[in-house]
Image (cartoon, rainbow, N blue to C red; front, side, top):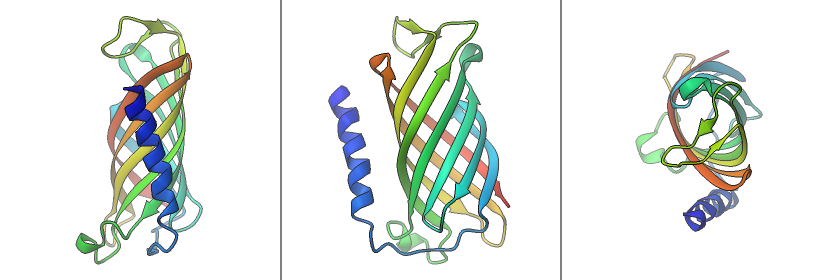
Length: 168
């Protein structure tokens, strides 16, 4: 499983290298704030550096009060979905960042594992699809993120969320 996660991370990095001449579509606003549901669920914010690149920050809650803080650098590629995206509303995005999992009262137990931990710090890869509603300041998105924890070393996890942001 470790090899699969390492392969996914390498593919994410490689995708960034092949998109140097990507189509650029306008973003409705520089900032966005919203909510997401899944594992974990919580609040999200986005800051657009330009029409292709953004920083994303998420704060969420998991089972038993586990707190998640995750931050990513995201690159949006509008060319991959251009056949169904004539008006520039949709993009495939990918990137990476950090994931911090904290548990003050209960010990965090990874799904399908017998081990427990108080805190986890991991490297996160993210792949998702984003859609801006036409004539509206809203973004809808779905993303999946494998996480390879560096504290403790070698543990892994997987997030999947669906969310919306209001752009301002």
